[in-house]
Length: 99
Image (cartoon, rainbow, N blue to C red; front, side, top):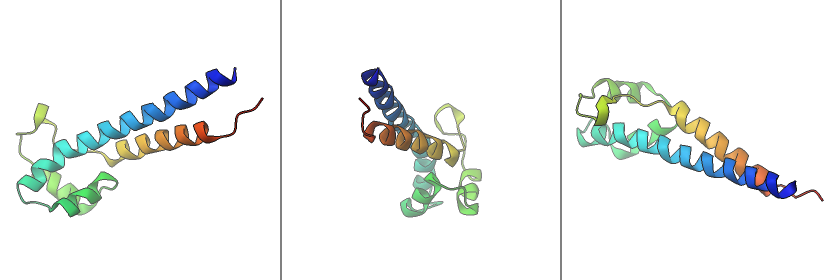
């Protein structure tokens, strides 16, 4: 039973990592164009990974329709949800096993 729990904990951590990569990919899909068009610097765009500031919202509003699949907005909640799943999985995996 303990090994099954360990496997589940590991799967949760892996899923969180994959979701985090997807969230970062989504962010880059949007903000690479924002940086390319000189609306924000890379440093300013990085702050948009985890928060929706007025500057991030303005930069997204200035986006044109040349994004892949027409996606023109990013939600930082995706990053936080993924990070939460990742941290939960890592913490569950790191706990001592019960005999």
